[in-house]
Image 1 (cartoon, helix red, strand yellow):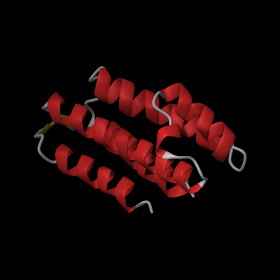
Image 2: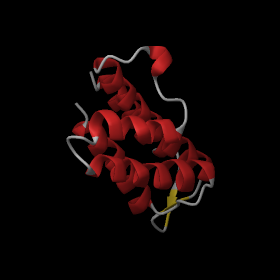
Image 3: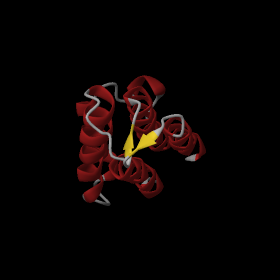
Image 4: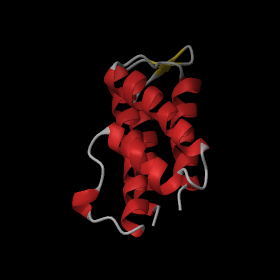
Length: 125
């Protein structure tokens, strides 16, 4: 089930490995942005898989972040209220700061953000 979503995480790590590291910072922002984007897509893929198992059709899957938040609240946060907060953090860190704005450079921060995405995927069922 989560195999495809976790494949995104592994791909993100492979992309990161293409960047050189200088003083514990990734030297090539392009690879960091790409890796953050791919890891975030893995999170969305995992959520989609769970929603499909819950009976939603492919056409009913969320298309915007607000729709993902609503779906998490309706279908998943009933059991674990922390999931929505974790999703919001992943969205802010990986999608906005990492991918969209290219603000992440520290190897520790980027790796931790990708690990958070992997941990989030592991909590979905």
